[in-house]
Image 1 (tube, rainbow, N blue to C red):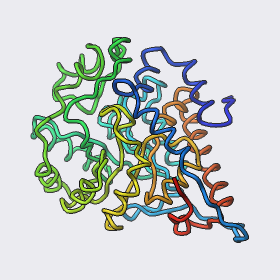
Image 2: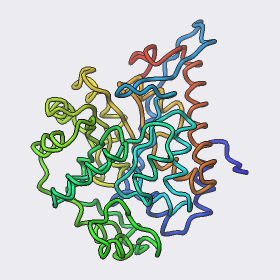
Image 3: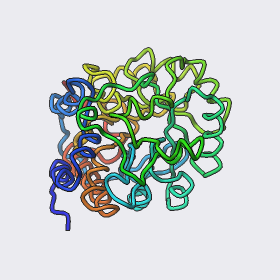
Image 4: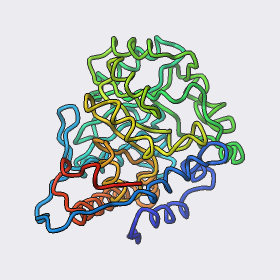
Length: 358
């Protein structure tokens, strides 16, 4: 039994079960972790000016992304190495996503094969990727995930180099024997040690990044696939606008969970400017610090089509595998439903910007 009333308590349970190294990897932010903290506290500064005497006896929190109806505007964000938290790993996560009626975005750094994850899914699976120095490898990976049945690509654009996460360096973080980033194996030999040595992500996975990537590479990626391409890591309104102009099918306002550029603004703070720049032309997702249904309400009010949650899913996984992930998603669903009722909102279209200030 998982005895937790909210995601903060679920994290405490997860911390008790995880090794210091694994918890540090999941929790950590870059440098002094200022942005990591700001992602959480910025939500507290936003006030809700709720409506009264609205018939909210029936509420609909569903939405549509790229033709797929999902039950709530909450997706599972791409996060690495789920088998660090539980042996069932990403297969348990995707099954929980299906039961919740939402989308799982599978990380490039998954410890389960993309083909196995899609087979275990009962709902849409998207795939997160980086453009590799070896463009042939990236081309092959895009073809592979498309053939596996993934229904969108999410390109992370805020990582020309790995951010410095000092908890990982201090803990000498590496994957234990038997675990690997199995979707990034260009050869059997590399797979033997992929992620199992080094101090932190920078040493173990530097080979998979390319600091020369530009907007032209977004156009190149689009030329490889008919799948929607969503850009993750947008922090500025001008970049949001340029993403649309480059042909992106959507954007994710994100600072990588505070794990890349420290002292970057909280994502909820820059979300309204990015939404205004996009002007409704493509869906806008947002992640970073979402821990309450109230946070989902505030994000939607400020222009998000939906939010993504990462660490809370990992806390659920560590606390109880698939059941734990279902509990984490269920907490957010119930809290968001209640927040809609208390704010006087019957569906997502009624969650408008005038509901919030701050």
